Length: 174
Length: 174
Length: 174
Image (cartoon, rainbow over all chains, first blue to last red; front, top):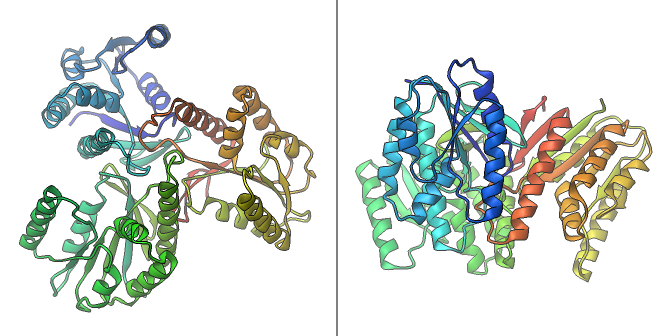
């Protein structure tokens, strides 16, 4: 069993900041790996992603962008590198739009997470606490995101819910 | 005071699975009663509801479908039968669309829940943590669902919030 | 460091009721001040706001309506008056629609909260746990509300999340 933490939260809850701090604060001899799943759809977003990547490089991170090929990026990571995946929900959304086989993708990812020897933190959005969306694709996304969160929470040693920057342990200790 | 547990959670949070497991795991001499409030609007949904009912029958449940007549179903339940209501929020939505007197329906339900002698678990959705809906009916539904959850939480001996399949005690112990 | 509590919750979660009870239950020699940020857009809402104000007056509150000028109202409050701000999220929404400089408004408010000598409770909505809104303004509002909640939660001595009327301590004790 490796050291896998799932960090859940809403939009602008501070979940990514908590995840970054936890990776950097833990002792590590290899540069931590940041696997980013955001996809740039325009120049503004390309520029913003580059700024974030440069900031993280200054803090010692290596960054890989993997909007779809998250599992492959994780399989190829240096075994001793602590890994931060940010975030699972965007990755799921990218695969939903790409028409991928979501249960198969989820199973491969869960296996790669379990196989990574160094500490790993995955960030995910909790999106199921509003009213039922009008849009059928949004309903399907909400269901799939909830399923993936349940699957990975079952596997994680530690699950933390972040609200207004404050962590709450749902499984394991803070 | 009977043994009443309210289980809250978002879409695909694992709340129904937790509720079913808790009912089946507790000692009982009478078959547990599952009161389902989902309404089939098409053949696909009719088929899905039938599959779930057959699965539960195999696990020892009796199922009653009560999209509107939940309170009557509960009043007629065998006194020794543990009861699972899944879910209150769909029942409320059905009554909202039917133009019912919601405070009166809520009061009758609360009374029937308190009067059932055997353990009872009710599942409800938390729907108030997204942005304000554009749609006036959705706003009213959100308000009414919040009011019902508050009313029943005040009466429950135990309230559990489920996130990614993980329970958190809001009242009483897990 | 003054006594500042942030109460977070969804729509109809019971957060305002908890905040009012906490202010009234704490010992105080000066009438508590209720700073209301709701804006009446029609006669029905004007009437509803008046009813609430009269109810609070009967319970000993002084009420100030400050849809935009919340910080000024707080700066002018009697130093010994316990203060309830209800709610921050409406105030933020009013400033967003008014085209205000949100980071500057947030910083001034945070300073005025820290400077008030008597106990202060601020109520805010958690709005980031649904799916991503279609509407660009709603997305910006959601981001800004999350940022403000994080900023004030960092400053508060106590942060409470309310669900179905039930409080959960995220920071400090209940």
